[in-house]
Amino acid sequence: MVAVIMGSKSDWELMKHCCDVLTQFGVPHEKRVLSAHRTPHATAEFISGAEQRGVKIIIAAAGGAAHLAGVAAAHTLLPVLGVPMESASLKGMDSLLSTVQMPGGIPVGTLAIGKPGAINAALLAVAILALSDTGLHKKLEAYRAAQTEKILNESL
Image (cartoon, rainbow, N blue to C red; front, side):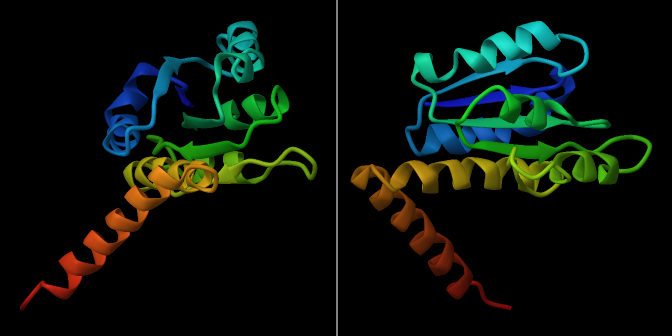
C-alpha cells in the first residue's frame, strides 16, 4: 500500500494524477490532507502509524515551504517520495528546493514540480513495489512497452 499525503486540498487537482496511476496498476493507496506546519501532531501520528497499516511507500506533496516530505521522512523508515507543488510566488522553485535540500541522513526522493512529479512519484512507487511483486513487475513492463509503441507509431 502507498500513502499519498498533500499539504492542502488544492494539491488534490494534481495529486489525483498520482492516485490515478496507482489505481491503474492496482496498487492500493490511502490519501490524506496533512500539513507539516498547520497539523504537525496529526501528521506525525499518521506517518508513525503508516507501517502498521501496511504502507510501504509514502508520497508527500506540498508547496511553498514544502516541509511535508521531510517531516514524513523524519517520522518513518519507509521510503518517502516528495512532489513539490507549484506556488504562486516562485512557480514551485521554493517547493522544489525545500523538498530536495534534506540534511544528510534523512532521505527524500524528490520528483519534478507538479503534474509530471505526481505521475512519476506513482510510477517510482510502482517500480519499488515491483522489486518484490512479479505481477506488478509485469504490469510495469507492459506499461513501458506501450509507451515505446505509442512513440514509435507517431507520424508527422
